[in-house]
Amino acid sequence: MAEYESVLILDFGGQYTQLIARRVRELHVFCEIAPFNTPIETVAAKNPKAIILSGGPASVYAPFAPVCEKAVLQAGIPVLGICYGAQLMASLLGGSVEHAPSGEYGKTPVHLDETASLFHGLPSETSCWMSHTDRIGTVPPGFRITASTPACPIAAMENADLHLYGVQFHLEVTHTPEGCDMLRHFLFETAHCSGDWTMTSFMENAIQSIRSQIGSERALCALSGGVDSSVAATLVYRAIGDHLTCVFVDTGLLRAGEGDRVESLFHRRFDMPLVRINASARFFASLSGVTDPEQKRKAIGAAFIDSFAEQARTMHGVPFLVQGTLYPDVIESGSSVARTIKSHHNVGGLPADLSFSLIEPLRMLFKDEVRDLGRVLGLPEEVVDRQPFPGPGLGVRILGEVTPENVGILQRADAIVERVMRARGWYTAVWQSFAILPNILTVGVQGDGRTYAHTIALRVVESSDGMTADWVRLPADVLEEIAHAITSEIPEVNRVVYDITSKPPSTIEWE
Ligand code: XMP
Image (tube, helix red, strand yellow):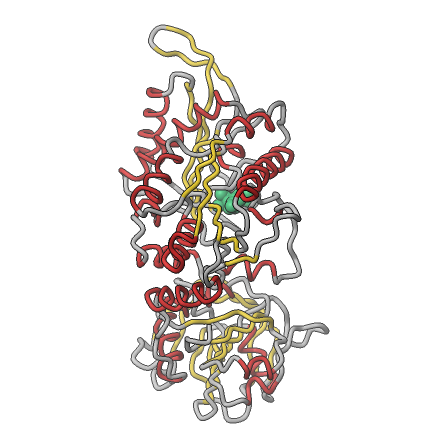
């Protein structure tokens, strides 16, 4: 990413680190997240226009507190410390940090010094989002106090000559209404960034670099129809044209009509070479009698790999495999604490005789950037605004055995949920909205007769990354419309229930 001016974010384990990165990128400045202890030589080699020290859960005086080299603050590069990052800046440069008599959490009134570099032009009395127990006790020599709250006399500090700034509050969250302007002041006035990070320029650079990487060789891409693989495939197709072949595995566990939709868009409209494999019989055979969620995921993952590998073997001499890996996956895989809650499936576990070099053109992008890139590439809105869909498909939304019959019921319910959510303007306002078939039969009454039929559960959640989620308080009339449509259009269903749990303790998918 040497083509762009960049900002380096040193990660001290804060819950909002990725959010800081997204805010910086939204202002059209490229940034990367690196571990807190990145050596100064590595930092300098990246030639950042600015450095941001993230928040973190530790206390700076704790025995194993994460610390960056003091040289990071002395390299002449503008630095912004946020929460723990500000406390660390204070303690490294000769100020002090103290345990506050009472912590501050949530929205807090704050007084800003309008003459400060980060705050000029902003209202002097506003609010900010606090989440801390420690606070800066004294500022280092050469610094001045630039903001305060009732419980935190030093809510911000600066040494404008050295371009060093610290804020105790979280300017990256939307609950700090002036946060975006503060960040803008830091990036553009203090660090003199120009804002050269746009998806149009990214696309042009990516096409060049994919071309030089693949040369005159050929590449394969597992296309699912989801946003990430669709954007990755389209980008690579722009770079190498017919040297790319997309493989679409129809697992039989996809949304209704998905195979035809993918084929008509990519093959017919974009003229991309596309192999469509109808593998539903293989998937249903491998799922026969399987009810345990992890077994199911493994069976689906294995059937997928087998179908894809079979196709790949017929295409001799294709050295490259395109994958839609995103930046959050790259950050996650670099972290030490990855625990398997569910086995996610992708094409990573291919047999040894199929060794590909990976092309991951989206590995520096966040999801919202991928959507923007998709628009720049001319993908239609119905692909770009697609909600996430799990790799194992409807298989993890059917409890108990997965059969063609119950997939058929769930596909119809899923289509109704999407139809009503789109019509009522909710589809793109939430993270995910979908139906689940819990395989629970209950008694109902339809016409004059008793029924004993399926229940559909409805799950609608908001989330920023899928790691945590809250259930959406959908208006009652939207819920009613969905329930009415499902029970009247699907004879096998006589009841609809709404899932009102957040993640944690639940997960988003039911299996
Ligand atoms: P959970 O159910 O773990 O889901 O709360 C978090 C997010 O991940 C999606 N998901 C998957 N995505 N392969 C995927 O590509 C998978 O195996 C998979 N399982 C869950 C889920 O839809 C939600 O957005």
